[in-house]
Image (cartoon, rainbow, N blue to C red; front, side):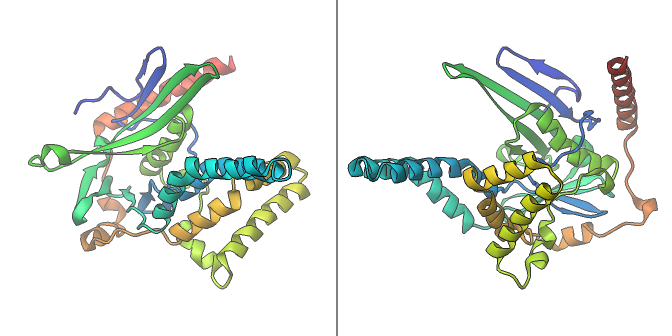
Length: 322
């Protein structure tokens, strides 16, 4: 399946597609794990997952609080209206809440594993199958779609990472697999993709500090998870206030009240501490460190593409400073 070259962009009236790979050249953005998709990181491999129960909670929480507040403040004015508000809220949010509950009690999907020493990616599939895909064949694109209504312009976007089945005899419905991350597209999607690209091309030191889901259970061992998360959240507010960063402290308070921040963190910690590991004996061996002399090297084509892109970014930075 042919894709436009990395670094190219296709714009339409209400959409934009930025193609990031192959070949995985620098985007010019700073790596940022905006969705906490990095579940496990070491010198050999990076596990990236698409399960984010915390985001679902934070999306639904404002609606739940709205219906509860409307019902509470109208209970003495019009009890029938107050009850109708609760019924309406249950109808609107009932199915999403049931889906959320189902997700809480379902197994967490296995992560995709990026092995930087072998320059390969392990992609778990159904029925215990997995693919080993060469890193330089992975595709990535940041997409944005806009819509215009009476309320104004609304923009949504994704980072889409695609993998091709290396088996030439694979059936048509088993040739392609993709991961989609609802991160808004554009520069945000580039920053998220840059986490994976920088890890593979530079190393783990290039990535920002991320949530340590693998060590999360050890961190909270011996304490109630709800109490532990609440203490950490309150301690974050306290640290910002001590540092006189009132804006950041206020944002945490708003996040707790209107977005359900502590609850989202608790559920995320509960489901991903520790994150699932790949249950394949061959991949356990594949994930072990290699001597440096056995590490896979970049292809000559990628070396040239990265050099050209870095020169282009350097020239662009000089023009911005001039």
